[in-house]
Image (cartoon, rainbow, N blue to C red; front, side, top):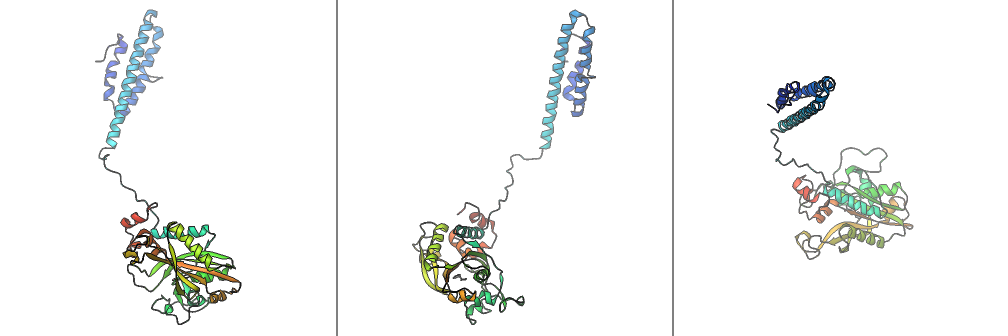
Length: 356
Ligand code: PHE
């Protein structure tokens, strides 16, 4: 039994004080009100008897009353804390707090998307706008306007995916096909806006190619086109060299080799120093130390005439490159099919921002 107070009316409350640690949550709050409540609490009522007591007793009784009140408060608070702790313990029963949390899947850009965005970003800084065009084209835009002769082998069913549908009325010429390059958007752009033209054209292109380590039947390209008065091959070389230095590294060596495209004259292919061996020769660059990244050239006079521009007044240059191929070079990926597989182990290595 708790220590007596010396006053029978107060001592009568001691069994209740002793019982506090056995109370449940509801009983505890009821008891707090019953003992300490301002209106009907028994200790509040006892306080009111103070005035009726003999003067000499008042002080000591008041002190005993207060001490008991504090003992009740402490006991009630301690019980409330114990009940809360018990509630929390039950709540987490069965939860293993030492178990590691489930890792979140953090999304990332696909490596090819990153490459496209970076390339476009570099050209935007140089004042190029972004243009796009349809993936379903006519023979005229994809080939003929670009100065392909009508019997060019690229126009064979063998290389190009033709559609059965008829072109919309009023579209210039020939059968419908899935564009084999982004160059038809050169034609669309020059027909749509007068020079000066400076655009980059990202998009998907399609070829009747079997899939292997270095070929896909559907892949991305980025076309570039600059047309104005007084544009020369110097602009082409300087801009593309600047691009290679920005995209790869300022030390990256570049070279231009003569090439052929029906829609450019002269035409070239640009190589960059192999990004894996840095020029010493390795299996990835077949021992040459160089990797081809794009085709380019001065816009052919016939192409300018086909879009009603006067070649005596306007000149231009164009390029086309393949972001899928460039992603392989940049990240040292041995097989282009890895870019389509969606294998998280691969994408986590090369797709995460900051990974190189
Ligand atoms: N269209 C060409 C290809 O797909 C690339 C290219 C574009 C070449 C523009 C020169 C100028 O191979």
